[in-house]
Length: 141
Image 1 (cartoon, rainbow, N blue to C red):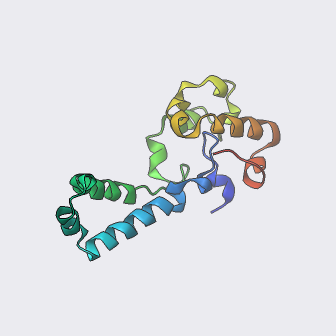
Image 2 (spheres, rainbow, N blue to C red; image 1 turned 135 degrees about the vertical axis):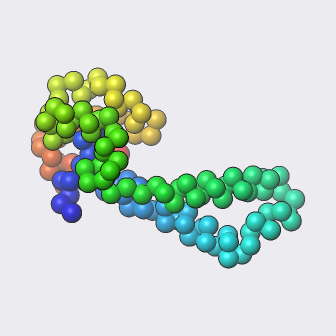
């Protein structure tokens, strides 16, 4: 896959994301497998650690993490549900860097808890230097 297809409309680089690399999903899958192999549900019942009272929820949470896989926002079904991607496509943009309002766009608010202003910094770089600047150079995530 060409690397420029890994530049999200929002300015984040999918190749840096655990969803694209599968790092968290793979670890969660492997841990669940090991827990099952060792009948850890029985261990959690037998050992009187109060933290093990939540073992079923922990195991379920790991199951949700296994699903944290993404093929990149441009080439996956996720972009059909992303307000940022929808907006960019509706306006004929390759990415938000082509929009004059990206620095104040409220559609990015859900990214802030994890990425803070990384995507805005990347969008500014792309607007100034082109898309290759984030692929080959410094990028924020």
